[in-house]
Structure formats: C-alpha cells, structure tokens
Image (cartoon, rainbow, N blue to C red; front, side, top):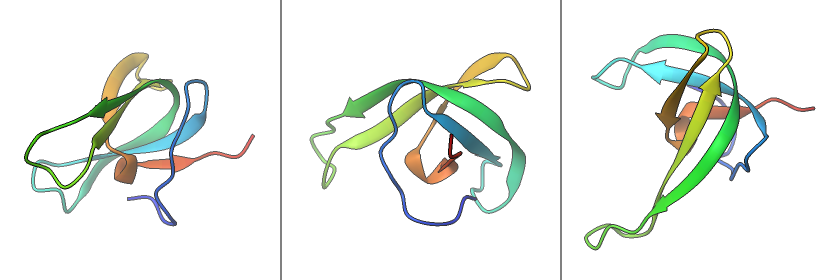
Length: 76
C-alpha cells in the first residue's frame, strides 16, 4: 500500500494505485493512473462518509474504483 497520509484527490490528479487481494493484506498489482471521479457515499450506519475514486489505469487502459488508502499522489 501507499505510504504517507490519506488525502483527497480531484479529477485530473495523477496517482499511483495499489490493488489488493481479497484478504486485503497483500498487494496484487501496482500502477499509475488518473483520477476521473470522486464519489462520496453517505451510508446511514457508518461513522462518516465513505469516499471512493474512479481511476483510469494507464497500464491496463481500463477504469477501476479505489479507496483513498489504495492511492498515493504522484507529484506533477
């Protein structure tokens, strides 16, 4: 996973993404991408909003959804 603090990203930001296996402990794949969309989910039972990001993965030429903890900023 990425190191450092979790931050908010905006569409157009360059990021490094980390895809985990289902158990959440091992990293399955890593690459670079571009934030396409930030989505806030207000789940009535959660302690706060749940945020996800839709990311265009440049190596795979596809889109995936990531949590903030699975992203790391790439400085421009």
